[in-house]
Length: 282
Ligand code: PAF
Image (cartoon, rainbow, N blue to C red):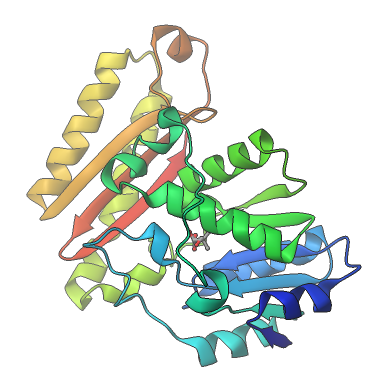
């Protein structure tokens, strides 16, 4: 595997590749990321991965400084997955001057759910993903459904900016007890780790209630509120637990509910100092 940090070197290395498939990451790779690499292999050749902890997508009080950086272990894992090039730019390679041109997602998608609680997050994600796409010029890129809204934001950005990149979604990989794999799980204490499973449990309970059927928007609102109360009494600080339409992440109205519109339930909540997110399609 070639490890490249310079944009021009990357372009030289990839010249003429027209089926390249790209998996952007922030490193600290776990089985979830490796499943993205395996899925990538089915959608093109060669597989290009990137590792870059993108300052632009972290808020001032978030975990940019303490975000786990495990480069050597990551390289070993990517070698085993047959990745052809690892693009690992430094901040100076990717942002040699202040990044003043940015991509701002539309309010209706970029400022809801994660966007409401992490101002600037999707602007940072879109800006870096567009820039990484411009460096790698992939035909296909793979994003995990664990970051459900991120996947939608990026798909919409590609569509609206006519970027010639097909976005492939990858299923969430879970621990045996159901907790979605995430680099941030490493922040959890032993006690918090056993409590963390309650997030997906809560989503499963909501999924079951919604599937039992014939609910109104106000029934759904009550279910969401009850879920937040339950998590709060267990010591969580929920940002949101919300049932949304899959295609636009807006709330479902009566007509949507009676026409069996495909839904997804999404949640974000803090356990101690760790903020976890998860979602479940209904
Ligand atoms: O999902 C992530 O790890 C990041 O948001 C991404 C897509 C690599 C952009 O920094």
